[in-house]
Amino acid sequence: GAEGILRRQALRESAARTYARSLPIVPVRARGLTIEGADGRRYLDCLSGAGTLALGHNHPVVLEAVRGVLDSGAPLHVLDLATPVKDAFTTELFACLPPELAADARVQFCGPAGTDAVEAALKLVRTATGRSGLLAFTGAYHGMTAGALGASGGAPDVRVTRLPFPQDFRCPFGVGGPEGARLGARWTESLLDDPKGGVPTPAAMIVEPVQGEGGVLPAPDAWLRRMREITQARDIPLIADEVQTGVGRTGAFWGVDHAGVVPDVMVLSKAIGGSLPLAVIVYRSGLDVWAPGAHAGTFRGNQLAMAAGTATLAYVRKNRLAERAGTLGERMLTALRGLACEHPCVGDVRGRGLMIGLELVDPETGAAAPALAAAVRQECLDRGLIVELGGRGASVVRLLPPLTLTDDQAAAVLDRLADAIPAAAT
Ligand code: PMP
Image (cartoon, rainbow, N blue to C red):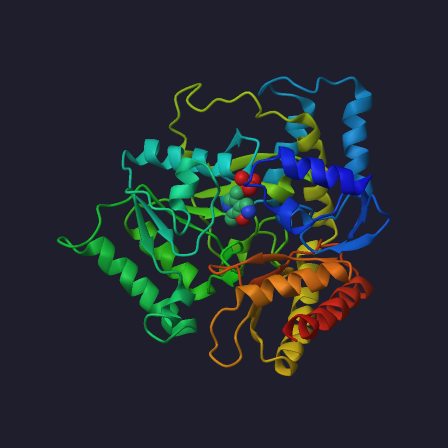
């Protein structure tokens, strides 16, 4: 039974296991927003495989695409050989890319995870520029392998220069918003241009259009545009890590679209594999300096993931799910701001599209309240709602529902959250 499975896995798996620790569920069935546990309990899943499931669990078009490959007799493993399945995937991917990039892009299949694609991007820009330094931001999350980890906040890598993400200015200088964005741009410029105390021209700047794991912090549009101008003027490639923000999640097809910014490299994973592991980088052809075989790997040709990804990208594009995520997300944010007015422990509500965060605070001091956030997550789980935590102090409750979320489902999610917050606060 479920209890036995949970007990055995708790004994066998590493102490590093994460989601399995906070979600003692044994999923046996899933469809759309809903996960069903072995004990028959049903949950509304607003974690969505950490933002992977753009169409929710087991969407019919995804299942059909995967079955199509399985039933066709096509090989499941062919390293990175060209296949009709890969051809269809790259065609659909290029149809979805910002047109300016699609017109002159190369794709490198990495794999199978987002962190692998980040590694590939870092290696590409270092090879292409002959430089090694990297500009990354406070609170960033790019993955768990050495290079990607070095670029993430809190994990020092000697080659990484850490710049404050705009919202961080509210801490040292007591300002955020447009002022933080302006100061952030000035800081970056003076760092790059100061002949004495500055940094050597780096190989790239890497940025998330919305920091996800960092606590759902949207990069202000004007700031992102300045970062584009600053990097372009100095011939520094700009890498957009769209692993979590891509494929409609934020209310635009790509997170950078809000600012109208076209990066030199885009890092893609999660939703592009339509529930299955797939990761690529897409970059301007001028950066394509690899020697043949310079970036290899056995698992860069997952045919099932490509088929599922093609179906997902096409469905999101044709059904304008990015727009839907934008309007529904706005409505949910408004409802949640109402909730924050009722409950002073909700210190901030923010997000973009269906990437939403509620920051829990101590109402007296305004300090981050991770224990309270954990209690909210638990109260949500008790009410059949799965949410995740993020942010520097794990004090942000995060919602990443599928883009197929209906109005009724959104209302059910909000109802459960509205119950869970006061229950956790008392
Ligand atoms: N970049 C971002 C922005 C992410 O959110 C994540 C995963 N949460 C990663 C990279 C790493 O992806 P993966 O977990 O697939 O290695």
